[in-house]
Image (tube, rainbow, N blue to C red; front, side, top):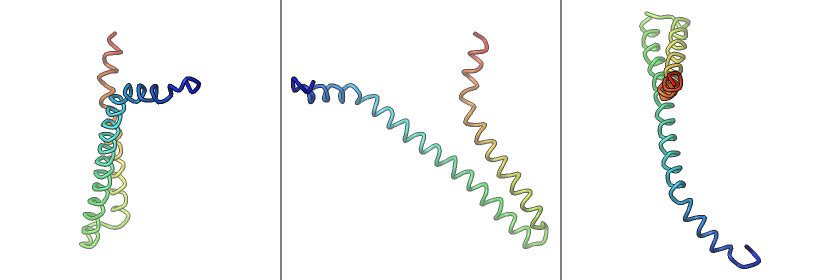
Length: 101
């Protein structure tokens, strides 16, 4: 292509051909980023809320620090597990279709 000077022409054709798929990929990437950000926010919010409530209970002497950490870990791991489970939910429909065919 360089020998006949058609580089710019083919570059233009290529850029026109990939314009629509490129825009779709940008939209998908932005949606995925927002979803990941929301997921991380909720995980952090559960963590912060658990320790805020736990700190109040420790101050009121209704809980000791070891029990606070056990309950906090249980809540955090439960939130992580639910987040991972929700990411697998779209695959369940495909698995059902694959199992029946």
